[in-house]
Amino acid sequence: MTELHVSQSSAPQVVRPGFRTQAVHAGHQPDPLTGAVIAPIYQTSTFAQDGVETLKSGYEYSRGGNPTRTALEVQLASLEGGTDAFAFASGIAAEDALLRSTLQPGDTVIAAAESYGGTHRLLTQLYARWGVNTVFVSPQDTRQLEAALTDPAAKMVWLETPTNPLLTLVDITAWAQLAHAHGALLVVDNTFASPALQTPLLLGADAVVHSTTKYIGGHSDVLGGAVVVGDAIWEDQPLAELLRFQQFAGGAVAGPQDAFLTSRGLKTLGVRMRQHCENAGILADWLQDRALIKQVFYPGLESHPTHHIAHQQMSGYGGIVSFQVHGGEAAARRVAEATNMFLLSVSLGGIESLISHPATMTHGSTKGTEQAPPADVVRLSVGIEDVEDLVDDLEQALSKVF
Image 1 (spheres, one colour):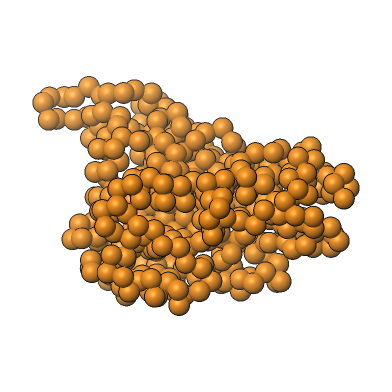
Image 2 (image 1 turned 135 degrees about the vertical axis):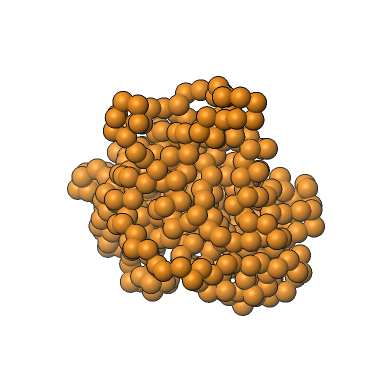
């Protein structure tokens, strides 16, 4: 069994600024040359050196580091309560870097079912070819998790909370305690909640992954991913250093333009998430009262099976609402195709509202497996439009189908 150490600091606790304050200011200072409030985008591949092995401000080549990317990484680490963050070209690139940094052939990943289809594909179709096994367990059954952790090859526990697309909440602290008791890392995909609503590192997770394409970027105009870590030690090395090496050696880094756009989006995450949550809550309540809807999945509903966990570990319930319709897959597909304002798309987390049929779109890679979502589920990514217009759009769509 690999031993996992998490160092405990005896230093006095520093009072952190509020979330929105950190989002605006962390990693960002006025340009020292001109005083520009927004620092320039360092659109360069390489940096002139003062001498052989003598660098200006620590930068040599943009794969190894770029000031625009550094600003984003400092911002991300601050908001997640971590020590280090690493920005990548996509969410899957971030996941891949973390897996490569920590796993070897013969290792096992224990993953909570209801994971994103791209993660499922990465683990079961790519990493399986290199001798890494994946075992899926119910996100609501810690007994399954504990049983799977008795395997000495189990080195990592991977979960999303809320899950995609059924929005099941997982008790991060409980899963962290079980993972650590068996010497495994706990990784949390925090894409759906974002650090505005949930900070897994502060609840015991060892690493947080994001598709920054989603809520963090927030405007559907940039692709990116990130890994944020604290002070965990893995196989006698700081996890941050393992990731730093993999980011440089693997090279799937965020470019300066992408880092700038992601950082700009992140500055307004707090205020955007407040509206996403408000609109989603109203739509979830409205959908519950529709006779054509079989079941609504939203953590903010008291009827949701894991509402109590959301209430404990989140500061809001998020902007995603999923629902099952009467009439099976055919009806679900027709609803997804009948909206006007809700655009039919595989993504989420932007200011505009999106609708998808997960079984054939975001989770197509899980088709035929036990991890495939129900075919009669429709997923909404609720934007920040006037909620009355969103209600009207769903109402006309449902009336066309039923």
